[in-house]
Length: 108
Image 1: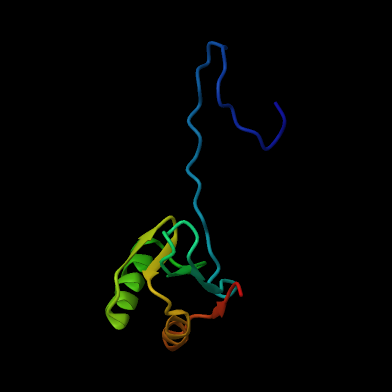
Image 2 (image 1 turned 60 degrees about the vertical axis):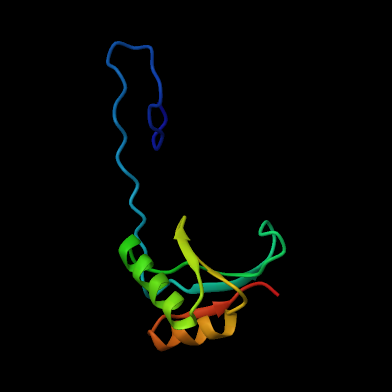
């Protein structure tokens, strides 16, 4: 086998080796939160999407909860993205910067 590949299926008698879990290590100095407004796939309704947030799942959930409470809007956290209902891009940018995170507006 080539170096850097892993065994997925084999007919050999050794069996299948379990692969190691993938850990996403994020350097907080290099990470920049991106904020954009979306309407595609949402029935024409606007949503603010935040991605690239450093930290684990618990930090992401607590940040999402804090943003939703600050704005008084609904939303969700899934697939390493925070989705807030409505167009709140500028407010979210200032909130993230006040929390000490680097944030940039993405999209048009």
